[in-house]
Image (cartoon, rainbow, N blue to C red; front, side):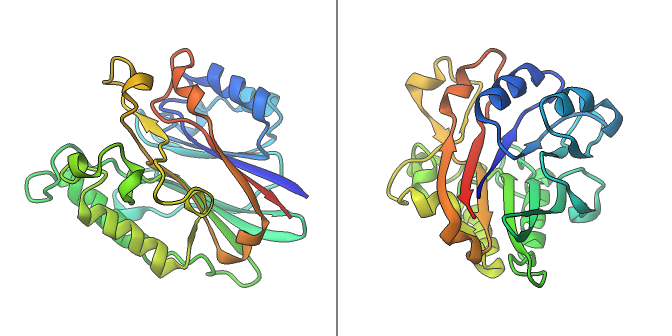
Length: 267
């Protein structure tokens, strides 16, 4: 049975609903996980999302900032949200669904960006990010009996050398500093997660999901980073068929600086 799931930092779902509609019309993922929706729960465009064929929608929003949502063609149960770092931010939501005789929990994350200065002593935002990642280290891919797991989202860290346009140039830039990359790799290792994008694309190859708004010509400059991720429990690896990074979406009208990433399984 074919199954697909997409993750996308939409950078305001109300502002960018037209490109959500454009994406869904062409790609029709079974589940769409959005980050940085930037709206409260009651402000989410629920009717528009349901009209696209997603009757099951879970929203964990907050006013003006952050926020995550899961829109699904399949029923969602056991909705759970964890308040990482205990500051009340809407940065995590998870739920269970069933497909192909499997029970799967999907986690949708929006990890803090961390500000501009990679020093927690002078930049509390960076400290918050490190603390958030530290708390993620206890999240196990095999935490629930007879339940597989998928973790997606804008994790705001490009952990590998070729997840950025220049490893050397970005070593002191937030999202690719050693303390961040080592921390995220430890989340993967401790939790028993499989980095599905790098299962299919060798770590020696460049791989990006984000291009800055600051670039005059993002496509020509191609100074990207892989900030968006799709991981799974090991038992789902044999069912993995492909992953699509929709680079062209960065050039759509009023785009997000992130593009949709879609994983395809055959159960």
